[in-house]
Length: 419
Image (cartoon, rainbow, N blue to C red; front, side, top):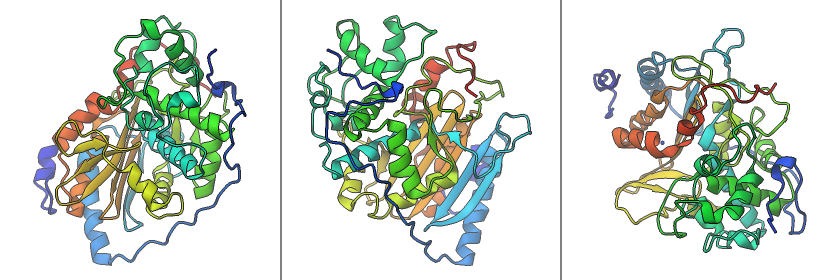
């Protein structure tokens, strides 16, 4: 596939236990609650783009799509935008691979760890509303939490040193036939601390860990007085107009698309599927583009908070790769920066790439796994931006989302599909 792109002359080189009962959908109201009023954000109109530039970019996007996605079993949607203008948009396949219900621009698909971008920015929104401070210890809000030095910030930038619930819950005997919810993760961290392995000192080094964001979802619930799904729906989706996005939670009544491996075999649910904050947001390329747009101005958050989110916090190793507050990034010597996040859960995978200076966005979502979704990074180069594809692709397979390894352990369905 890559050799095909290299031949394309398009000008570039071709990622007591005080756990809130979040999943019983109630909250402790003993803290100051955030505003429950739905804000409203007006998306800025696209900037002018010449017909010649738009056509040139469309041509390059088509070449990428045909060589990388169309031939790889891709089943989902893709959008590329420049200065707010959609220059390429395409949808392929059907929700259940049976051709009965085609995937369209209004079909929500699981965006996996791209969900972390919403969780992180929701926490910063609560800081802006003076409901919390990211330098606070997590134990300030959950006094029974018995891990020293873990701050909200260290959860956001994956420097908490906590173990991954994808592993320790099972290792310590959580029943495979019992669903795990966010409060279960917190309770077991507290109860089983002496038995948990691989606990590192807080803020010593970066370790990508889904536990961090499961706990941040609990924090949002504790501080806001709303469930995480309610808060994200009201304060982000409804406020922006993301009509085809939602947070999945137990018995939410939503019809969820199935998920498939690269051979087209359905991947069953397992007992990890109800934890949210680290995953479980369903969205569309168009809705994610709206999310991208509202983050580019100062309506949702002031510039100082956006800059805080995009700051690199793990500098113990040299290199361009780093992690901010809910965002992966590449920082280049010339001042250019790529802000992105990949996602991978069961057969769902997603890539959400944002070129800040170039005001360009690349979004790909699929519910049939293909690693070529992550090669969307190649398209950064059509905006005169070099993305080290081989390194980043290896990173996404190894660390961006470890969840697929665990999720695929279950070869038979543990739970019936929610209807």
